[in-house]
Length: 90
Image (cartoon, rainbow, N blue to C red; front, top):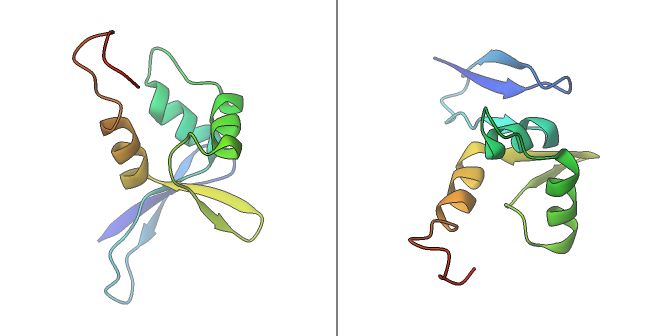
């Protein structure tokens, strides 16, 4: 079984699953911003960077000098923001 990982240029590459580990799809900041914003209204990378520094954004992984976002963390962050009306808090 293969899984995908984001490359610095925002593209993805398939990586084989090894050692029986569960794969985690990881995104760099640009790819995470695109994922969160959706196809028709991309989120600015700078917005995600600002949210990260202020603690308002999705959880992230710091690997050496790299920042990576797991798809599951992005999905969880989005799910926390579901509202039924504009008058709901958040």
